Length: 262
Image (cartoon, rainbow, N blue to C red; front, side, top):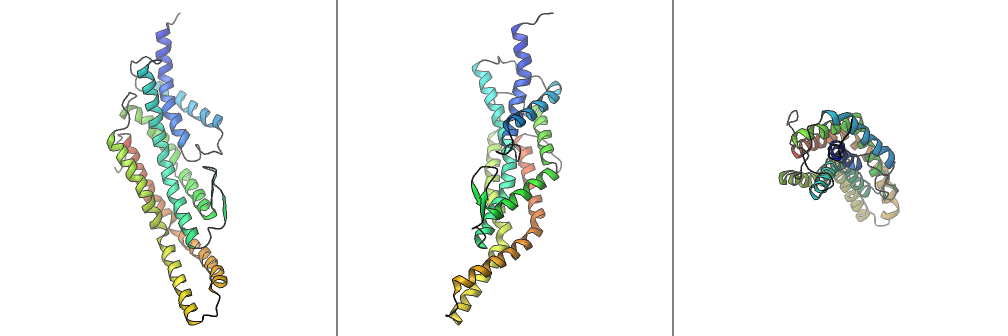
C-alpha cells in the first residue's frame, strides 16, 4: 500500500489544525498557561486531547497545508484557541484586581510576592484571591468545560480562513470592561468600611491633636483590614458565580455555540 504526498498532507492537516486551536487555548488558560506549568507538559496535554478528538471532528477544508491560505488558517486556529483561553484569565484576574484594591485600601499592600502567572510582584491579598479563584475554577471543572467547548467549536466554527466574528470581538471587549466593574463591586464594601475608619481617625485627630495619627492609624488600619478581608471572603463564591456565568455566555457567543441557559 502506497500513499501519495497529497494524501499525507491531508492527513497531517486533519491533526495539525485542531492541534493549533487546542494548543492555543492551553497556552493562555488559567494554570495550564502559567509560567509554573512546563511547556512540555502543556504541549503533551494538547497533543493528547487532539489525538483523542481528531477522528470525530468534521472534515478539514480542502486547502493545501503549506500554502499562504494554509498559513492563514493555522494563524486563525491559534488565535481562536488563545481567545478562548484568555477568557479564563479575565475570570481569575477579576478577583486579583479586587484583592489589590482591598490591599491598597486596608494598608496591606506593603506585603507583596511574585505572581506565578506573570512573574511580577503583586500584593499578597491579590495572590490569595488568585489562588481562591483558580481553585474554584478547577473545582467547578471549568477546564473540562472549556475543553468540551473548544471541541464542539469545530462544528459551530469550522476550520477556515474566517475566525471569530466582529460581534465576538465586541463581546470580548465588553467582558474586559466588566472585569474592572466586577472587581470594584467586590471591593466596594471594604472601600466604604475603610473610608469610615479613616473618617473616624480624622475626627479623633481634630478632637485630640496630640494623637499621632500616622503611628496609631497605620496599625489600626492593618488590623481592621484583616478583619474586613475575613468578612469579604464570605461573598467570594457569589461574585465568582456571576463572573463565571458571564464568561460562559461570552465563550458560547464567541464560538457560536448554544449553551444551556443562554
